[in-house]
Image 1 (cartoon, rainbow, N blue to C red):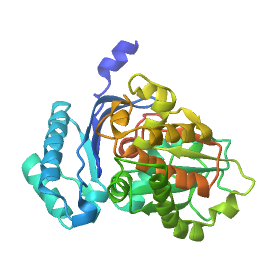
Image 2 (tube, rainbow, N blue to C red):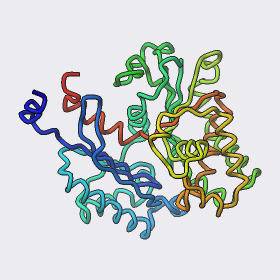
Image 3 (cartoon, rainbow, N blue to C red):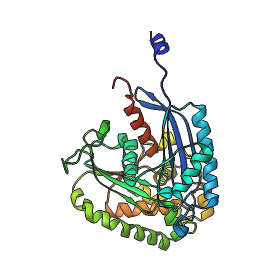
Image 4 (cartoon, rainbow, N blue to C red):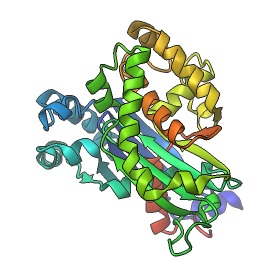
Length: 347
């Protein structure tokens, strides 16, 4: 009967989400399933679109042409998979660059893809929507963070909706049903900006501490307005990280011979483990970091900048546990598009 029902059922549409960041171009193509969605194709390439942006204020010709090449691959995949609905977004590099909008016009002209520049708040909310199912429902508060290439999104989730009932609950299921977005910020730096400022290639203990101090300084205004330290006193909290930094740290901690999303996504790390990985990386040379299978040459000059951003957050809001999400913005986009179209059916 099931086969018959499937034969009579209308074909399931294919959806796509594209995230063009400062460092990475990522595409996810999926179809709805009974429990969310199934990925049917994906693509990820480090394009370093924001290279040199902090010095010049503009996207460079080399970075733009690398990005156009990657976007062509994405456009071909979407055509081949006959995508019915898509949302294609650009983040910090295009938000900041004086020629960001002009570049997206060029993309539309040359590649046929229409990208929108995502606001900082929309980016923070979509990251939460994408990894919300990994929030521990037994926690009181969770810091969901996404350390990007050119910006870092931080969102304090009030898991039980206990702080302020006037804040509407986040649209979501599972642990997010009664959760509220209590405070969020988007910081105008990420691994690329920090690595360019402090030389991420050759990092000593002293220069690592300088990076941590610089980030700590920039976290102060957010802490002053959100007053999280006071609110968290005696509460159960955990961090949930969705970014290359935490997935890399998890891969190194698990000593994976090659990166494996299935072992990393949803895994828990003790903060002691995170700090042990960081110390190990500081002790290594740039070439040794390049040789690490979960880092590679593409990220070897960026990984410690990410660790410094994470360390600054851990010092400000001490927690013992960190959960790792190899999911985020794109998954958030897909789940929202599908929900708008009434998937999963009958839920």
